[in-house]
Amino acid sequence: MISADGLGAITLNEDTSKSVGLSQDLGVIANYSIASNGRGTISGGSAQAVVNVISPTKWLVLQPKTDADVGVFEH
Image (cartoon, rainbow, N blue to C red; front, side, top):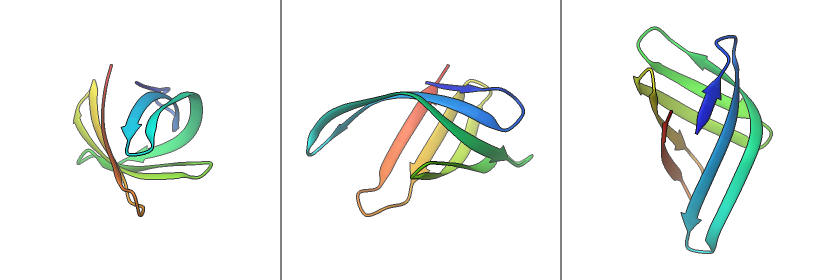
C-alpha cells in the first residue's frame, strides 16, 4: 500500500514474493514526483522506481534493477 501526502512524500507498506522467499517492508519513507500525464518517479534509501498512476487509488511501480520488480499498489 502507498500513502501519499500530496507534498512529495510517501509511506510504502508491501509484501513481496521472490525466488529467495517472502519479505515484508513496512513504513518505508520515500519521495515521489508525478507529472500531469500520470508518470513519475519514487526515490528514497536504496529504492528507485518508475511510477504510472492508473487511477487516484492505483499505482503501477517498476523498479529497474537486476532482479526487476513490478508492483501494483492499491489504496
